[in-house]
Image 1 (cartoon, rainbow, N blue to C red):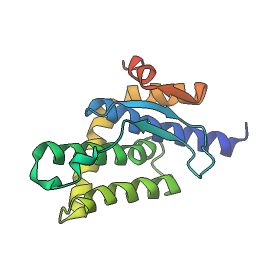
Image 2 (cartoon, rainbow, N blue to C red):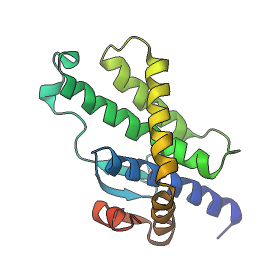
Image 3 (cartoon, rainbow, N blue to C red):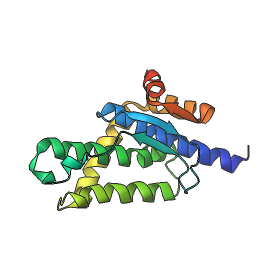
Image 4 (cartoon, rainbow, N blue to C red):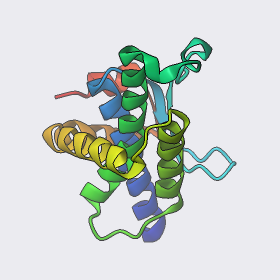
Length: 161
């Protein structure tokens, strides 16, 4: 495999491993994760159960349970870029970063929280602390993704040290 392609695949593996591991750690276990491009521009994907039930969309800010659900989704979303940056601190920003940022901002804006940047900074801090604390698990998942390309949620969980 060409060196640039290997590096790109490895970056994608760490990115998706970040989403998957954080999902388990904060109560949003993934159904699967893959580093196989889907043809739409995404070079990897971690799939979770549906994000928010339709019943959560009205009066969203009135319930702490509903707010917590969005918080979990945002922290999970920002974890991919962070994991990739922990592994490759000098890497340039890429389209996966932009997509995750866009989705996280959309979740926060949709819920009318006032200071989006502070909210996202707090989500990044939480995700970063968890990633660093559980880095051996992130590495195990990334290495398994490089080897097998796709993992089920159960396979991700089985790699937890």
